[in-house]
Image (cartoon, rainbow, N blue to C red; front, side, top):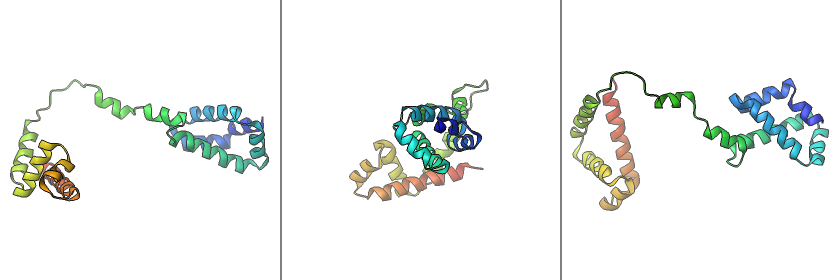
Length: 161
């Protein structure tokens, strides 16, 4: 079958590598299964239109497989955890990091805040949501959100050396 031969040649390999990244070979195999299961008259119709039209169709199918939540490859991609993320869970043998100085620095910075900001932050911590603080105070949620965002930014900037 011409369509299967095309997806296994060098030109199409580059297409799969560009779209599928590390899982390009798995993507190519999935596309081969799709081609074999697809209505063969329609496949032949696409193939007869030429290699470029067929490549366009393959690219669309690949993109659907990777980006559509219904595609098999999308589910596979979203279940893969990058090595960097796995390493976050691996406990390295090092001394426990004393976080108390960081906590003290944050508390000092909070105490230095303008009274309004300090009260909004305190309510946000107690209530747990911008909408709850908004309903209690009557201040629009957007204003509360921006205030909390600016407080966080200010604290982060003061902690970075």
